[in-house]
Length: 263
Image (cartoon, rainbow, N blue to C red; front, top):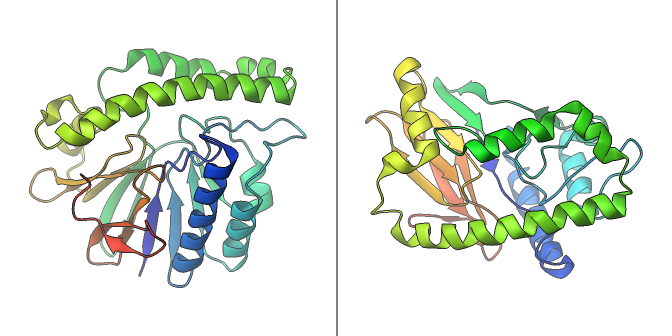
């Protein structure tokens, strides 16, 4: 058994050439994992911005789409969680690529182990500003209004605000990568969410999230584990469950390696 999890590719930034290089590496990784994958989970923010008009989708990503279609055509299930950057994914991936689109957190079980799976945005205490914006973005009349913007205008506007947000977040995350081993985990929203959830549902063995861009695997109560998948902007990290253990790996350099330390 091999179940693969990866997140936060943010294709489209910072420029075409860099994004294309990252996309080719992702396609290479998918080519590798399809040889033994039972299921593949892409846990959100595949693109830095994605919006499906009725008859138009964002330009690019042909290599990735072709590889995913090849994998699903072979009967390997691929799941895509909507993240905060691709929240406006609707039915294109399901109809054209055979992907199962996940809009909410799900619980799955393999080999007697229970997994809580979510991109992670909006979970945990605080972050009320984003939680409000998420409701605004998911409000169907607002999606309808955005569709009336010409795709060139809508996409450029969204990418502009996305890059501003990404720059600010990367500065914060760079500091937290250095200090993560020292900070109070009670301030980490997703970790707190997992701790709280576990009190009501103690049967969960693994909590797997994206969103935070920091690859880390931590114990929760001596039995369960908190896993953040990291990203493919700086870490090229992913997780694999083989029916016995779950390991964080990196594909940096085009070959799989154990990710023992993310610093």
